[in-house]
Amino acid sequence: MAKGKKQPKRILIVGGGYVGLYTALGLQKKLRSLEASVTVVDPQPHMTYQPFLPEAAAGSIEPRHVVVPLRKVLRRCHVLTGRVIKIDHATKTATVESIDGHTDQVEYDLLISALGSVSRLLPIAGLEERGVGFKTVGEAIYLRNHVLSRLDLAESTSDPELRRKLLSFVVIGGGYAGVEALAELEDMARYAVRYYDTISAKDMRWVLVEASNRIMPEVSAKMGVYTVKVLEKRGIEVFLDTRAKSLEDGHVVLDDGTEFDADTIIWTAGVKANPMLANTDLPLDARGRVRCTAELQIEGLADAWAAGDNAAVPDLSRIAEDPTATCSPSAQHAVRQAKRLVPNVLAALRGRKQKPYVHKYQGSVASLGLYKGVTDVLGVIRLKGFLAWGLHRAYHLSRMPTFNRKVRIMFDWLGAFVFRREVISMGQIHDPKTEFTRAAKS
Image (cartoon, rainbow, N blue to C red; front, side, top):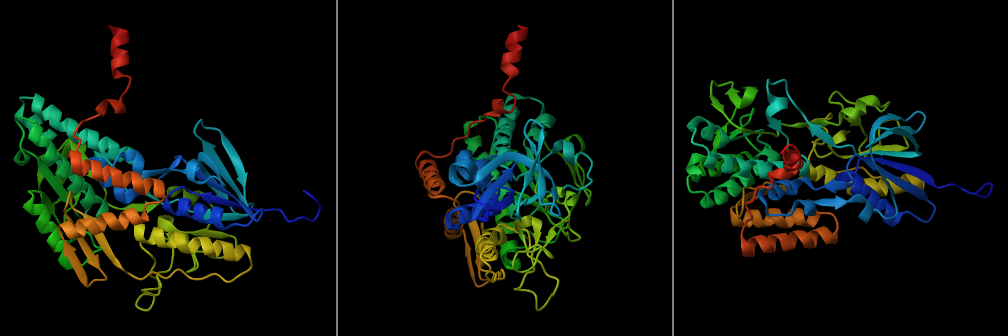
């Protein structure tokens, strides 16, 4: 490069989730030629749209269609498939561990932390061994196959105790993820049992355990009560103000004295900021999130930003009543912060003033299974049933990245409507070498 010629800024985006993908998409579209280069680092080569995971698990959407391949859509960005294990902002370097275990140092000029969150596990005996999370497409595929395989096994056994355990399903955590996962999987299993001679919907036991006194705190208390009634009407047991004490060997013990065996335990009881942040020199709050200004800049740093679940961003909509309020880790904030992040980074590059992230509550939507849902719009318009379910699908379809994925999901819905659900367990994908190994030993 000729002497004196300005070199492009190197922008490093750590995390390829919703915030990371949308920020990279916006930057590759709006950056001027040679203004900056963008590198995205994530352990997965795709972004997962998590609000559609329940429908992917229930078979309403092809799992491949709820993920967006990073390299395909980020043509003007450099995508690294690896895990950032350390950030030293003082020297502007990040340590990246690749799939094969070797590490590289990636230098940058501007940093965007979009690491998101991970499941928050509690010290409950048996949780790590027996629990399954619900944050990745792999977990959604596994749970679909697992639930259907429990029906197959229950049909094939004459042991009443084993059968009861196989047909018992527990979801711990009554937020959006837990309620939607429970509702969609129960709806799928209820449809599937029509093809089993000795199993009926009444033979299955579905249980929701929530530590607080209500479910789905994002919607109004009235809609939360309605949702509990809808679930209970379907035969689902809802335990509020209840905690799991032990899950060893699938034996569920709740703190109200309830005990039973279950072969499926799904854990959705909260998230925490990515623990890798502790291995950085970025300022963190008490919950391990990166402390940010309202402009999404990391406190004290003019060349670093953060957004999404890993960022402690002031909630300006509640600042009057609580000066310390920060935005909750939710998909709504991630979507909107990503939109504000792009123009703020561009403004910093071009010496302009950045604007604060201001969130105004617009409402919440949730699916309770096929053709069933609840919606709370601005705390004024509350819909139930089919209309709420349709609004849920329309809202999330509009937020799904790329036109390609939107069209594929609509065709998935059309196919499921015309031909009904597919209720086939593909459990062999979780251990593909079993038959090969058996053949080798025979």
